[in-house]
Image (cartoon, rainbow, N blue to C red; front, side, top):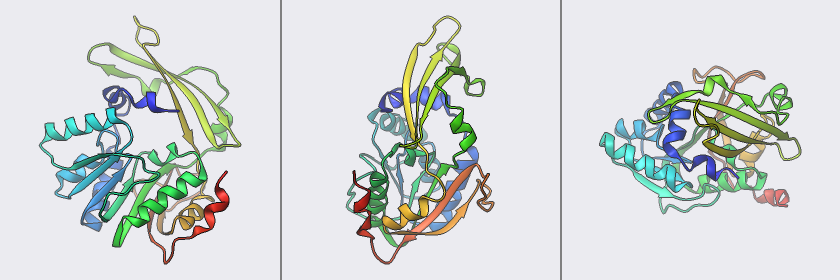
Length: 262
């Protein structure tokens, strides 16, 4: 499980401080769609707070209470008002519909079972207003990179960051790939020159291949409107870094995903 990875929200924000292109993309999608925005797996509000600051009414749903508390703190610091809800994206009932639902930053990949993904898509469909859309991003799996997940602990220099209290923090990662489950199981190690492994956290992330997503979405009662391969909205290709989907409600909710249940 990955809960421990998200238990220190400020450490998480320092580890992943960037994403300006992703923020701009989702802000543009909110402007294009208009209306009330819901983000599932909103984390610390990295995408949602800027969208709310543009004047869109917003709600964020997040499973981790630590991440949610940091999102509330950051929104208050910026003087931005929006609603925050602790909940599970696999099954939720917020009592209203939305004009845009987003699932950003690979948050969808914390759902490891196909049935959980379909359950999430069904819940999204029930919350879509007429004409509303779901927009989400997940990485495009690289078979070569997955094959290199051999369990060896390695330094990730690109992930090093500066902590105001600890100084430079180095990040090591050891990962293995479970091909049957399509899940990468890793342990992340955080160290400084004077304090080795001051934090160690597991992280398990599913890979969703491009051939799967249209089927899973269809089983959840959604249909694909657009699919892009990067933040510039370039067409999706086999070597694209991302899978960026825009979806809307299908005519009916397909119940045939019962076969996916274990």
